[in-house]
Image 1 (tube, rainbow, N blue to C red):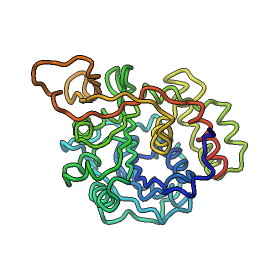
Image 2 (image 1 turned 90 degrees about the vertical axis):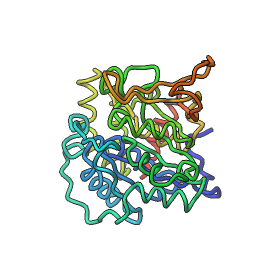
Image 3 (image 1 turned 60 degrees about the horizontal axis):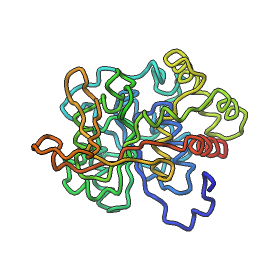
Image 4 (image 1 turned 135 degrees about the vertical axis):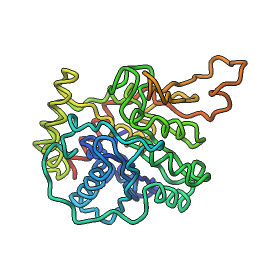
Amino acid sequence: MSAIDPNNNNKEKKKIIIDTDPGIDDTMAIFVALRSPEVEVIGLTTIFGNVYTTLATRNALHLLENAGRTDIPVAEGSHVTITNGTKLRIADFVHGVDGLGNQNFPPPKGKPIQQSAPAFLVEQASLYPGQLTVVALGPLTNIALAIQLDPAFAKNVGQIVVLGGAFFVNGNVNPAAEANIFGDPDAADIVFTSGADVLAVGINVTHQVILTDADRAVLASSNGKFAQYLCKVLEVYFSYHRDSYSMGGVYLHDPTALLAAVNPSLVTYTEGVVRVQTSGISRGLTILYNKQKRFGEVTEWSDKPTVKVAVTVDAPAVIKTVMERLMES
């Protein structure tokens, strides 16, 4: 089976909203989504994470203008966590001060829509019940707010694909926590226990998907518009990985989660209850209860809905699809 289905035009396109904090790997995921014939991107919602929310909105508008897709609305999300905490750290050392590799692009002409991100999510899920996939590439604040705003949201949304968690491995903020979950652990716990169809794609999986220096050289030599844009912004991201992980490549976190939403056969998963540690030294830790033991006593794990947690990924197919779609742009 090829990574791309050329005959997909006959099928109903999968409607997706990308909740995003762009971010270099977010940029790659957004570009791949725009080049994916299987999906229709019906909106971007913005959240703090790699950058603060205001800059995430600016970057989202900029990326859509650069892609010639100003028809896609951008809804600005929360500036604070679900418990009204402020974002203490942003990943400017990973993505650059502007979130886009310190390229200092001119400000976008477009503006976000009036609606807040949670209100937009609720509206679109009720317009397309069971058909909307939300791909959450940052902290889960907007998604948790949508769940609180409308009790029907968890059932109306088709699937929520979460880039987040460090299941069975160390985190990337500290040994316990992965960055997106750490950004708002309370929101993550709300989403994981909401009863929505949730697929978590954690760094246990995304660390298997590496875009190498050689891949980057291939992108640089192609005429693809998106490939050329990315080669400008990638240097900061590659140098961070060289310094932090001593590797000649970068992890493709966001594109992996995006493609798992587009083509679920790229990952395998296990199912169980996931809870998130919301305080203390292991704040942001994601714990999967695999249901192999039945516990007698009633606890915070009892009667909670299950979610899917990705355990394997077809890394070569993800890389191949990312490369093809960026180079054909």
